[in-house]
Every structure is written in structure tokens, then in C-alpha cells.
Image 1 (cartoon, one colour):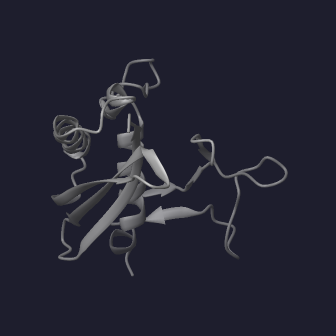
Image 2 (cartoon, helix red, strand yellow):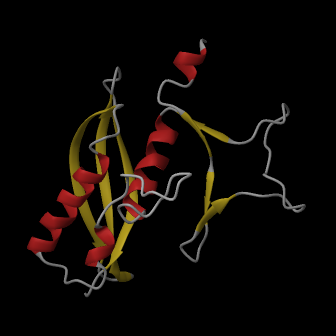
Length: 155
């Protein structure tokens, strides 16, 4: 398998999503970057897994919240944070879907966003909205999905 086939949608170091909502690199007991596999390679994400991680980063990062090496904002992220505490209403659902589309539009290897379903578990977790995003990738006819915790809402 050529490197272009294996890494057709880019590669990245896998992030650790902690229960307190923070994101970090996974480290071992000595504080070094955690390594996996017999070859000593860091746990990297390939193809669909990398796209899913990039989607999560863009949706969970406030637009302009990441900086380049000169301290200038990078044009990725979303405005979903503006809706924290907002009402679970049809108008906010439309705004959330628009923010999601705007945040993902520049991921060049996403051929199409097929559907965005907003989910709220009214019984067990009525204040957390999730988005289930169905998408197609360039040069791939399969439909994939990613479920991401979005915002805390007023039930």
C-alpha cells in the first residue's frame, strides 16, 4: 500500500478526550508521548479517523481560537460556543446546523455533508446537545458518521 493510499486524508497524533471535557495528548507514566505498537510509532489516525478528529476539533474550538506561530488567529473553528445556555428551539437548531456547515466547509477531503441530526437525551442528559453528522469523503462512496457533543442548552 502506498503512503498516499494509507494516508489519503492526512495523518495526525491521536488526542485524548478527558471526562472533564478537556483534550490533551495521551502520555505514558513517564510523561512522554504514549507510544503504541511494536514498532514504537505514536498512535496516529489515518483516513476516516483523522477526518472525524478534525471535525471534532473544528466544532469544539471557538472560531479564531487557535493561533499560528506569530500569534495570529487561524481561520478554523466554529461559533457554537455562542449558543451555550441557549434554548432548545427550532431557530437555534437551524443556527447550530449552519455553524456546523461553516466550520467544516474548508475540509477539502469531505465531498458532501449528507445530513446533520441534532440529538438530546431528554431523560438522562437533557442539557447536552449532540450532532450526528453524516458525510462522504472524496474518492469514497461510503457514507460515514460522527457524533459530537456540541453545546449545553437550556432544557
